[in-house]
Length: 223
Image (cartoon, rainbow, N blue to C red):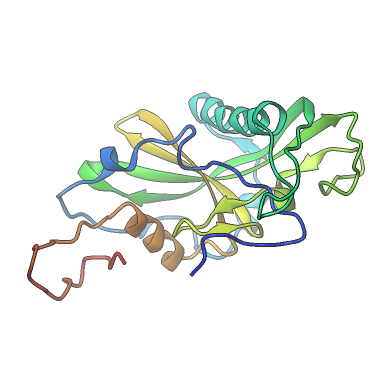
């Protein structure tokens, strides 16, 4: 299965090396519950959408801004290719302003050593300066680049995806917050959350070199 989604316009974003905690630092040999049963309903965001659009601690807001700043740096400094195969020349655009339009907690997932991965619904928009190609991005009525349809992020399994809601992943270790990047989900379900935890090898599988054992029921299969 390819890890790249090809569309009319694909913007490549380095997700797992900017602003994200190293995966090895988050792997544990302990076993705890996979998904917090008291979390928000997996498929219904109607109630959450009715609350304040920005409803997150200041530290989470700063981490969200950090991820957006990384994206802006990629767009304006590093540059990007507008085709998936990189056949065209490197493109850069100037971003003169940015806004977080939604940021609120949707789920808390039980993770290793009594820590959690908190999923914050996030939307943002970027205001380009002197954008010569109006077809390069989907713009709102005021000329802002919206996060909904313009940028490719990984899904729960790390495969690149351009459609679906965005979620900021925050690792909460007894109040010490770290960004694990942004992911997309067409539907925030229990299965999506379990796949996300499995991506970080949680619950950890018992691996015996040279022998084949059936994975225990509590162990998410990593392939």
